[in-house]
Length: 189
Image (cartoon, rainbow, N blue to C red; front, top):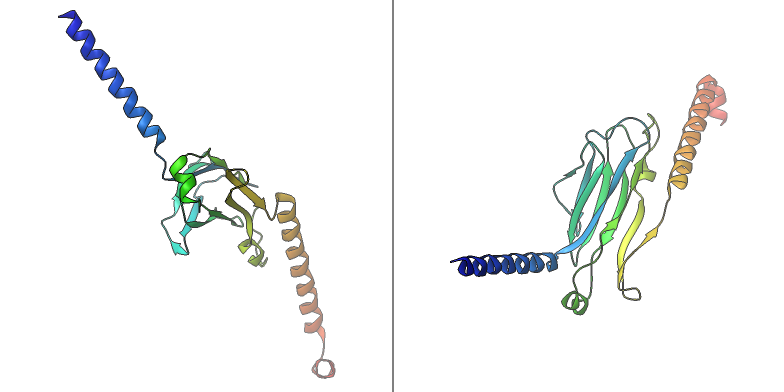
């Protein structure tokens, strides 16, 4: 009786481990994970607006700790827009196109970590600069892994915000000056 019990236990253990091994080998896409932070305040209400091949998907909610983890299916181009109320959004592009021969050989890639810091939105500042892609992630055959191109780092984004503030102030001063002119002076201009 003890021998049958031992054989049954051994069979269950072998099946359990082989099931876990086959599950661990299964991969449908690249995992992108990281932490979202904001310059001021909390990340309450933060989401990732997701697009796959230009088609809008459901928003991905980010927890109050700012951590996120999402799996992006292979052979698509994803646009992820990180946003939080009261902050300028940031956009990254993830191209998950991988040659079929590579996926057949080994579809597992390490998770790609992307930490995002959102800057506080300033009222009256044009936000078109925030529509630019700050990072692009893609597969590189030369390294047989996903790599990234950084277009704007935090310091560059801060510089763009400062430029937008300066332009806003200059436009305001110009508008104030034009308001002080008489109709004859305006006609002369």
